[in-house]
View 1 (tube, helix red, strand yellow):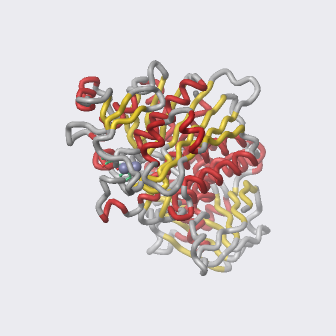
View 2 (tube, rainbow, N blue to C red; view 1 turned 60 degrees about the vertical axis):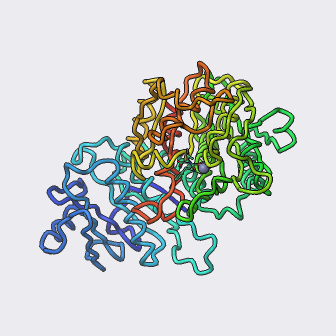
Length: 490
Ligand code: BES
Ligand code: ZN
Ligand code: ZN
């Protein structure tokens, strides 16, 4: 796909469609030809520029493009980065529906909508790029043919200032799309061996240092916790480690992602309804792997280590039992209270390894960890857990920017009591029914020592049942854009 900024003459530029965003209460453009077209629409009663309003006019005089699609943006006061992202996504989807292969979208004036030009262009490029993607690998008849060319119409001086922006946004959005595809992939085609292989081959292409620990090495190195979760599955566990290490890097960030390719619950088998979509339980792993690949293109001056434990959680004669006591990589013994609390088990081994081997300044784990977090925050907002105010706030702010919304949750010391085991050092479930997202995070916190750490529980926003403006049904790629933003400001 070609994604570019263009400063064109409306009359001369012969695109299949020109999109003009229109506000209800104000003309937001500073291009006379566009303002004249908007004036024309003011006579048409049914189009008022409300959020879902749309008007298509064909063969307008003085316009080279075949059709002009006016799209409502609502009231000016409500126009923010996300409104622009949604608009661009809607625009692209509209054109795809119409079997068009190219589009030009008019960019509003920075002065008139009181946003910096960068804060207009970034989300518009994102919405357009992400809205162009659909996971249809398994469909013979592809109903969604992506656009070949997407252009944003701007003034000539803006084109010069932001000439590097489209390719930068493409690198980030390609990461999001990669994560989406991994998450949407059915679990029979992404066993731990297969998913690890897929990640490794992309890492190699990007010159990311990569290492894979297979079952034999995991055993030798005593990753007891990962091995326990994998025990019930025919597929063998993997741990993929990718390192992006640029010259002159002054600090190291380690990212650990939960990679459960299918979470059946194990011996504590989930109910039918809860089993649905449990292929998405490797969304943390997908986000970490895709971020590393995006980072290798963006080239920030910071060392980034991606640690990706990958397992399948299945019941069988070899599966771990409730009551089993195992030894984690870090040496602590863990009593298995529930085999469905498997995410925290593979994470602690990944996190302990990250700390021991790389001694990072910052450690962030991403995981679809608990249903409780979805109960607390709903399906669109992730929970952030950290003892470090600055890190938690930085994550929340990156999420505001990318609209991957995060809400900080507490880590109360006294709740740790609920994780006590009569027989082992700690238990993998809480004795209380309540506050499950918090107690899961507290369990992880027992394995981070003094390392500055944050945990992102993305069980809600990792997956989408019904498409929205710039994401189809399936994996959302949550976390990739957020981490790309965060890594550049740490
Ligand atoms: N993968 C699930 C969490 C999950 C739930 C992700 C819903 C996405 C949507 C996790 O492994 C799990 O099963 N958690 C249990 C923990 C419980 C047994 C302590 C849960 O949240 O119910
Ligand atoms: Zn589970
Ligand atoms: Zn799980």
